[in-house]
Image 1 (cartoon, helix red, strand yellow):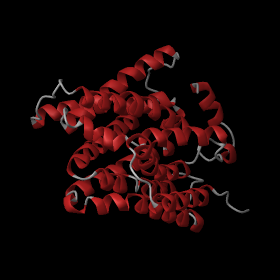
Image 2: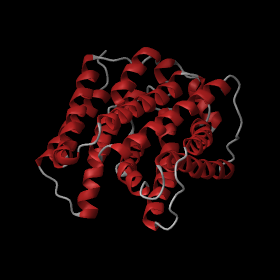
Image 3: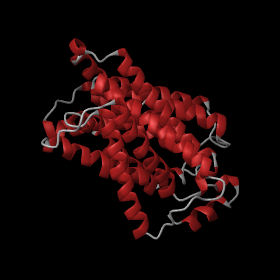
Image 4: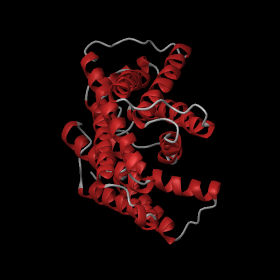
Length: 315
């Protein structure tokens, strides 16, 4: 989407302004594609962690995605420039993003993938609260709260089997709290993009602030903390890293921030409850892992929750 198109959309009356429109077929397709891509992220991070220490991995991931983003912007003739009044906000966005992924990568290294997913994907609750407080037209309602609770219950049901299966090696409480802190960071980024002037800049620049700043901050932090050098001989780990950088942090994030220029933040975030379910489904298809009644029940609860969150308000 061009900058001109975004500016024209922002000039419309509030009822039709970007960020409050209902999901159309394109929006649903994009958000489902993002959730499918994110489904295996925690597993890929753990695999890459066999060769790359966590903070350095997060920084290199941002550097890879940031470089691809520059090439994409040049190809699409999207200007790489700071819009008036957005410099400080962009710096804040990049710093929050840096902290978010510092917490996530450290958390994933200390807890199980199932527990990391459970706490990270509490994000829609924090987005809903932030949107209610700071984004006009994206208010909490009894129906939306019921939908969030139903979807989170489905998420808990989806990962419960993994929690039970790993009860002998449960991740640390500290790791769980780090992932929960990352969820707060993700929600803060989403709300900041929608509640400030950043919503008027191209989605590529919204993402660029985050990737370029976090690459410098996280790689520098890795050196300051004395993390060990990566193991370049582990090809499987580097392939997993390439997935997290090129596909997750570049392609899917460009699509996500484009989505936030068109639809309400809380409604878009509700779809992310599907991510761990898609991860379980991918494990079934690729690794032959069984899918029991928990998976089907979780899918039903999450679908009901997403419907309630996105249900048009009665006039």
